[in-house]
Amino acid sequence: MADTAEATLGDYSQLAGNVAPMVEGVARDASSAVANFSAISADLRLAATNIAAAADEAKHLIAENRDPVTSFTSTGLFEFTQLLADMRTLVSSLTRITNQIERDPAQFFFGDSQQGYEVQ
Image (tube, rainbow, N blue to C red; front, side, top):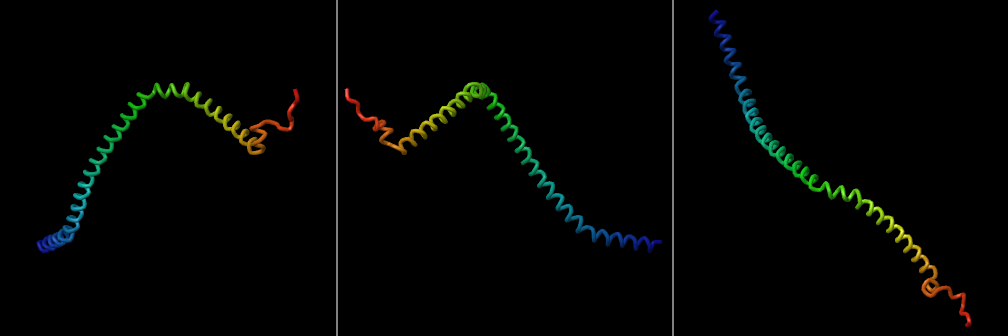
């Protein structure tokens, strides 16, 4: 029985010798992972703080500009729409005038010359 115990102890000793390098590698990797996790968690905390600050700034910016935006949407937007409509009318008129000038510039600038002069 003592021989069996010694053989078993030798097997365990050999097993421990084989496992020790593997455990050292795993421990080294785990320690590196913990160090990386600490750095990542610090970066995440900083990012969360920055996001919270940006959200707070956006909240204040929106609250600060609520009245001007409401004013623009109630009157300014209507006036801008009217300006666009007037600009379309102006462009249409200018296009028509340009076409008349291109077609017969003398008639546009001097009038209809076919009527002639009337004696008084």
